[in-house]
Amino acid sequence: LFLAFIWIVFPALSQDNTTNSTTSFKKFAIGVTISPDYCFRTLKNTDGNDVYNTIINSKNTNEIPKIGYTTGINFIYFIKENLGFEFGLQYENQGFQTNPIAQSYIYPTPTDPTEIIYRYDYNYFNVPLKFNFNIGKKHIKLCTSAGFAFNFLTNASITTINEYQALSPSTTSSNDNSNYKKINLSPIASIRSEEH
Image (cartoon, rainbow, N blue to C red; front, side):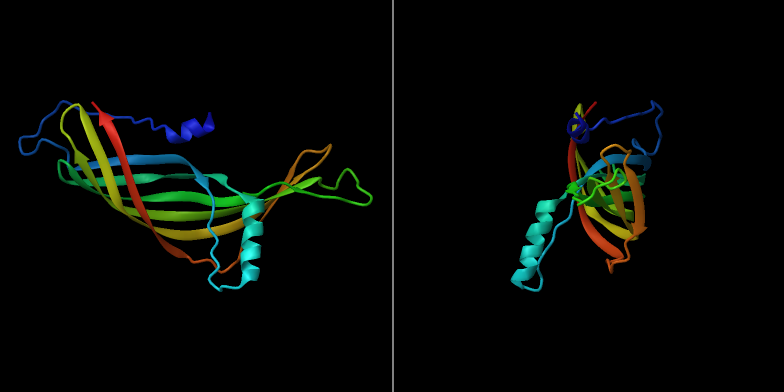
């Protein structure tokens, strides 16, 4: 059910019946972005050493995607009725997590966790810049967009989730101070249809 929710778009459209003597369309539009995201990472061996390939294979076996989100505000300036330039500001949570890691003890106690999960979170401020193209003017319209986004890493953290046999899970978080790139550039492309 959740996966179905991710792939379904619920557009909310509005319009008025007022007309302007100089133009038949609005020059500006504003919108809100809210989306659940299915996040993971890609590892590449840039050194060529086979030892790193073994480490990468191990991580790909033990680490899995996690659910993230994106939210923000967007502005569109329409150059023509079917062509617009869009920009905005978004907050994004990405990352991944591990499978539950079983713990074993010689003399276990109730306060010893039975499983541990590590969750890695990366939070960004994004500035998307893209062009929107609309094809069709009547009942069905094809909407496409293409561009890129500047991604500014604000912080990274590691969350440890301890699972117990008879106790409630406990969670602790700490900053991840690894030497990540602070600014990234990512492509954006989308296509959708609208029926009026």
